[in-house]
Length: 253
Image 1 (tube, rainbow, N blue to C red):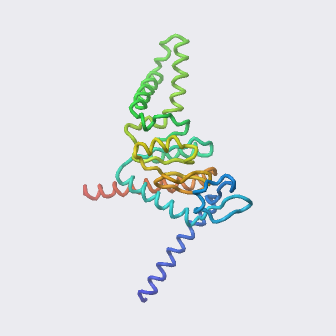
Image 2 (cartoon, rainbow, N blue to C red; image 1 turned 90 degrees about the horizontal axis):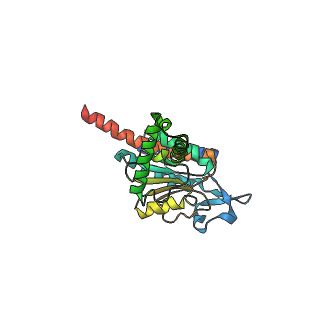
Image 3 (cartoon, rainbow, N blue to C red; image 1 turned 90 degrees about the vertical axis):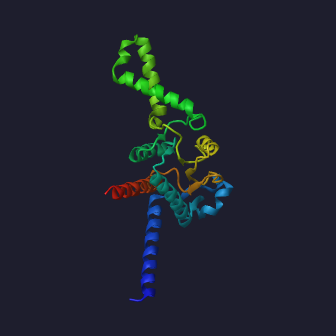
């Protein structure tokens, strides 16, 4: 077998794998944007065309941006860095919580608390107080208070649980921010930029990609699309973390 035939077979295999990934994205509905009337002007380069007035993302372009984001998160995983997941839209909440738990990363699915990144010391104090309340509730200490006070503490606990449960293990600023819908989560993105924290964002046609470190132009409103994209990002991070563990195990042997 000649070198040329080997190279040709290798190229054919790569092309086959590439087309398979494009087909996976298509089946997941990653290519659907919003109507042209809602398109942000700077999103124009990411589209293939229109279908019934719906913008259609060029999946070959999407693939390139997704790969860059995966490489970044894989490298972050290899360094043991943490990223903060943010998605408050209904379609993404459950998936983001699931991704956060699977990767061991903090997440926000309720409204973004202003100052989470830019006033982190205050947030840390609130988390500490939430931990204190959690311990009191778990040990049954709420019952030692009057009915009125116990009711007040219970309501406060439930409110804080909703807001802080996903970030209670966040002891320092994250090394990256991963958001679903950068337009909706603009406050989180702005805070990350102020703290020089890289931003990975899944963003639809109505978003502005300017200033995002790793934009992923794609359908950010479909469960199947988000499941696919978050699954890829999660796997990239976990694969990066696994490589470090393997290398450490080899060194110890």
